[in-house]
Image (tube, rainbow, N blue to C red; front, side, top):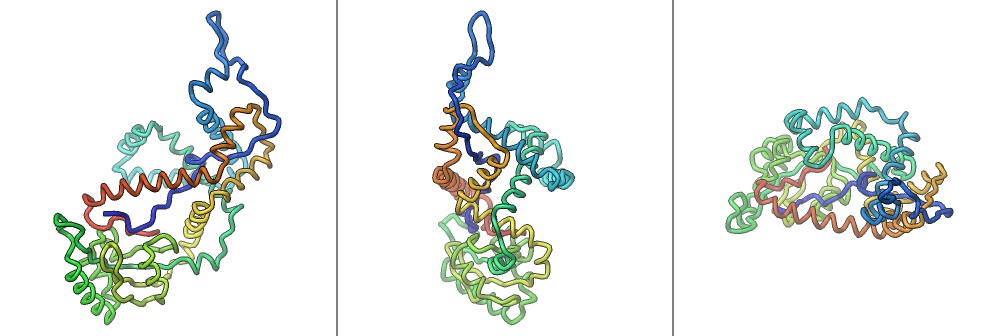
Length: 338
């Protein structure tokens, strides 16, 4: 089953290496890296072997790590990162299994820790450069639960009902929960076919505008806290939605701010490229090779190129979710921020 939650790819330093180049670039292809009686290895040889763009990415990745670490190391607590990794290890069944998964991605545990630190540094940079107001966080988020009555996708779908039966069942449930909203969680656990949220009494956590199916979102943001919606039809079936009390909003505010910021950057990659340009200008970064300069300007620095890469990744991820969803049992992509 395709994902109910819209695909949002994180814009991290490990995925997109962005920067600016100085105007004093020179040709360094003839520079010798290694010399021998049999012949020399020059910069040109390495670049031809690896490709200009890969050399530019690798060089800039190293530089970016140095700059961000220098600027934000005092703002990032590495103990918190260690705690996050231990939590992830537990979710994967222990340290050994976690490290085995990393090896499949050609990454060591130390590499992963460095990547997590780099992401934390980048978050600090974006917090400095991209503004998200308290009003924006409040207006663009809503805590929600739902019950999904799934419509049969095909003849082999054993979970779904016919459209007519699904609608009738959803209307019956809606009447029950409208009379007694306190029973919403209990009924969601028993009846909802969104298996991931059903385990949590139907809870989707905080939903951010632009994150969910449009019809679902429109209905949710009309509700006041504690209210239950009418039956809402989407491509996934029939939903009954409840706007939950936001007693933990202050605790979740920082996380929600980061997610809204991420959406902004996702929508407009220029916010990220400009943030990196400012950083590199501050540290007086200057590239000495015209070919690397050109590679950065034509691919890494171009927001339009980044947008194209995002679209390609989104299409690939959507295809993977469609292919694997049928085996997962239910709308596994429904959960929002927890």
